[in-house]
Image (cartoon, rainbow, N blue to C red; front, side, top):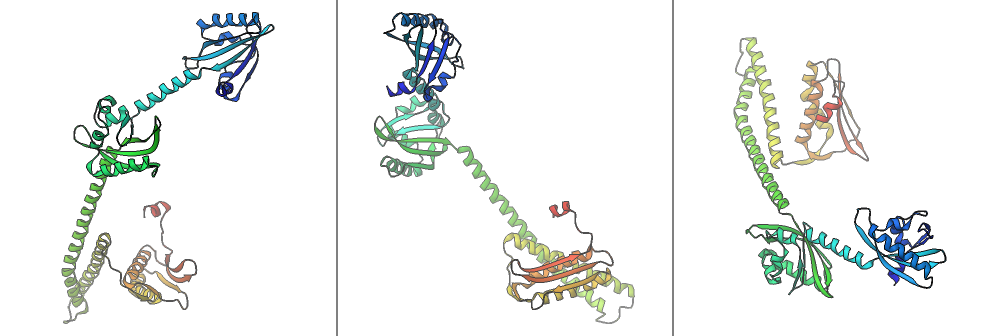
Length: 420
C-alpha cells in the first residue's frame, strides 16, 4: 500500500471530462507531466478504452458513495502501451480520478528488459556455486564457440571447471571459495579458457558475491580479451626484434670504428712526420701544405669515428664514466687552447667569464671536455668575422653549476630549435 500511495496522481474532471485540477506525488511526476488542466482526460487513454472510462465517470457521479477501479491502457511516447489503474469517485458534478501505475506490469516489463540485456550481452555472465551451475548467458557460450547457453547449462560445475586452463583452475576455484565465504567481496583478474576448437580464450573477469534464491553464489562477468593479448604478444616480439637489431647495429659500429682507427692512426703519424720534417727537409713547400691537409683531415675523421664509437657505446649501454674531482676552469682553458687557432683563423674573439673560487665538480672529465669542445667548435664555425664567442662558468644556489657557451653568430630559428 505504501508503494501505491507513493505512485499517485489525483485528477478532478468536470461533467464533460475536462481536467479541472491535477495533484501528484513526487514519485508520479512523470505520469502527471503528460496531463494538463483544460484537456480531456479521456484523450490520454488508449482509444478502445475511452468509452469504458467514460462510463466509469458517469457511474461514479450516479453513485457518489461508491468507487470504481478499472485498468486503462495509456500510450507512451514510444508508441507502446502501459497499464494504469484508474479509481473513480463522484464528488457532485465532478469526478475525482486517482491514477496509479500497474506495479506488476512495470515489474514484468523491467524483468523482460533486464533479461534481454543479460542474455543479449556480449560479455559472458555466469552464476555458480561450488557444486551448482545456476545460470550462464549466451555471451559466455559464444565466447567458447558454442551456439547458446542451453548447450552448456546441462554441464554442471565440474564440466565447467574443465574449460578453465589447467594452470588457472586452482586460482579461480580458490577465488570462488573466498567470495562465497565472504573473504573477498569483489575480484578482478584474468584467466584462460579452452575454446571448443581447442584454442585458448583470454578473459578479463570481474566477479562478486551475490545471493540466488537465498543461497550464496559467485556472480562473474567475463570479457573476451584474446585479441588484446595477441596484440601485446606481437608488441613484445617486435620490441625484442628491434632491440636485437639495434644491438647488432651498435656492435657493428663499435667493431668498424675500432678497425678504422688503426690505419687512421698510421696516417696521422706519418703525416705528422712529414709536417714536422722529422727526418729532414721535404724540399717542396707544396708537399708540406699537402701533409698538413692530410693531418687535419685525418684528425677530423678520427673525431667523427670517436663520436660514432661513443654513440654505439651509449646505445649499447656500455659507455663507462670515469668520475673524479675536476676543475672547470682547467677544462675551459684546455678546450680554449685547442680551439684558439681555429678562432684566430676565423677572426673570432674568445672570451671567458669564470667565477672566482669556483669549486671542483665530480664528473667524467673527458666527457665534459668533449661536450665543451663540441659547443665551442660549433660556435666558432657559425660566428662571422669580428664576432665573439663567450664561455661562462659559475655556481647558482638553486640550479647548481652553470657552464654555458654563447656567441654572436647566426643562431637558430624557433623551427630549427624544435628540430634539434
